[in-house]
Image 1 (cartoon, rainbow, N blue to C red):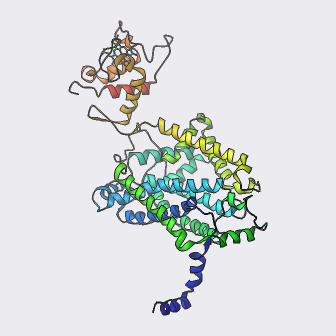
Image 2: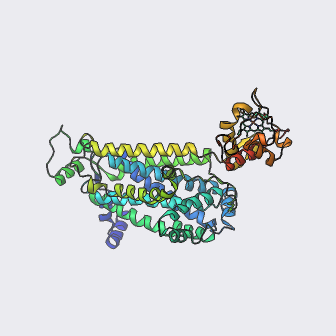
Length: 470
Ligand code: HEC
């Protein structure tokens, strides 16, 4: 019965040939666990597609409803928080897996002849993932989404000559608003998925057509006698390898399951952030980009204001081209690690730079949520708190409890109004001729300014939260 059916079906659909090419094909000897990263990325892409499709059934892309529908998904829809969590953490996971996959291919020299195109398409996939992450970040329409997008898109405005036009095209207007949201949503659920499917199809086609590479230490082994001709050598390794189905698939599926469990654990224990509803007037909000943009964000700080566009446009473009075109200019013949010191050296420096910049960026973005004395501090007060710790705690104590050098400020919110506190921090002598406290913004000619007016206000807002009942 089954054979008769499969013959009937095969006569009409020719699946036997497909089966041979896709499933029964042999994977060359030496393909180990590092070779599962590509499949794992594909697996997470499927998670994104499935969870994304369900989220789209509830989500409304308009400033009036976006935030409420995301809250509804998070708190009311059965399993909604898990769906949204998987989609949220899946995005970061894809960046990690693709990054590791590209890194493995880079170290093993697998981007070399004849797999140059596979590499180019793989890098394009990473770019699409990052753009999908950027557009998806806006959709919950919370504070974090709104301000990160405002800052992120504003960078387009620094491009000379076409900056303004570019900014308007991306935002659909002068500022981030309803048109930005629909624009990002359209890109996120329509344009990018189509690009995804096309590039994934091309990538997989090439992987099947060319076969995965043999690890360099086996491919160019001095221990065994191997055919000189590349095709013959590859066929030999293939003969000694395992069939894709079931041997290799089992490894791929095990890794994918592990990743799925990690995702569920992240959803359960770390949770999925959703901040307050976007408030376009809350310009004191400290925007924080998604972690995989942090290194660029940090890099930008190295460029002075009028040269910012260099960091925004030139540096990323050069970087992307350098990675994309790698197989065409890095032309050492050998794939062996010890024979490619320059390529691997430059690669290591690049990865180190990205890691260090990411870490620096992560360290310098203040936390969004801080509760102190049972009060949830807003972003201004959080900034004020860290300024207080560095500028004032030496005399007033870590908890404003007072020291020998300065009085307690733990009731200052009751004793003084914000205007007084602000002025006192700027220049105590103006209010109290006997003041011993040093001025932060002394009158001209009377010393060094230590804080800006904005910083003084940040500290003032923080100190104003101190009341007796705390
Ligand atoms: C060198 C020690 C010292 C440092 C540093 C210092 N203070 Fe003071 N502060 C004092 C002393 C002493 C007083 C008591 C009044 C006076 O002598 O000025 C005081 C008083 C105050 C008062 C109360 C004023 C009033 O009359 O109620 C405030 C508010 C205050 N400080 C805020 C700050 C803040 C904010 C900073 C950090 C930017 C800071 N202080 C840094 C020593 C210090």
